[in-house]
Length: 341
Image (cartoon, rainbow, N blue to C red):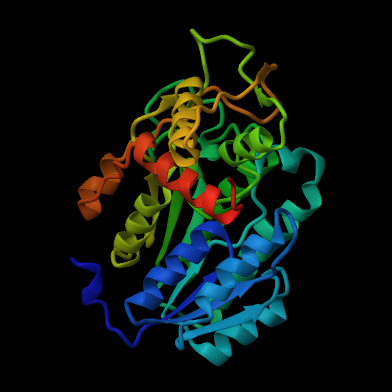
C-alpha cells in the first residue's frame, strides 16, 4: 500500500519531535498534509541550538502543534491525548546513548521506562489506531550470530540503555495482549545524516577535526577484527517508518518488531575513510583525522548487522543508501551549518 493512501484527516502525535528522527518524520508528514502534534522536553543532552533549529522549521507548517513537555509527566501525556485525540502515535522520545547510560542511569529509567509506560497508558485510555515506537539494535547485545534477526534471543543486553529498550518491547507486547493496542517496535541501526545527533561518533569525529583534536577510535587498533556497524541513512529510516505506520499488526496479540538497518555493515575504519573523503569534497582540501586507538568501552559491541528480510517481505522496502552518498550529504550540511571556510 502506498503511504499516501492514508486518510489525510489523520492526526499524528510524535514524541521527541525536535529530535533527529522525530524532526524528519514530522516534516515528512506535515509536507504530505497531515496534522502533527509534537512533544519534546528540549533537554540539553546535546546542543540545544540544533533542537531549536529543527523545531523552528517544523513551526512553519500550519498543521504543526508543539507541546513542550516530558513524557515522564503522566498528566501532560494524558492531557495531550485527551485534547488532540491522535489516530497514530509514534514514540521517539527517549534518553539515547549507550555510554551515557553507564554514568547517568536515572534519566534512562525516567524517560525510557516511566515515559513509555505513560504513552502505553494513554493509548489504553484514549485508543489509537497504531502505536509505533523506537527500539534499538542495542537489544541484540553481544550476539555472535549475524545478521541479527527479529526472532533472535535478546535476553543479554550489555548496557542499561539496551535493557530499557528491551523493556519497552516487553511492555508493548503486554499492553497489546491485554488491551489490543496495535503496536510496532522499530529496532533502528546506527542512524546518521544531516542535522543528526552531535553525540554520535561520526559527528564527534568532524567536530574534533575542526577543533584541532584527534579522534578516539575504540577498536584497540585491530584493523583485521575492526568493529562493524550497520550505518543507516536518515532518509531510509523515515521511509521504513512511513511504510510500517501504514501496516499495523493483525495478529491475535497485535504487536510486531522490525529491524530498520542498511543490511550492509561497514568496518569502522572504512566508514572513517569515507567520512574523510566526504569532508574533503565538501571543503575542497584533503582531510585526514589524527587518530588515537583505545580499547572497547563498556556497553559497546563488536558488530551490528540487520537482517531486513522481514521489513522487505512486509512492506516491500529495504534501506540501501551507501555510506558514500549519505556521508557526503552530512558533510555538506555540516560545512554549511557551521560555516566552515
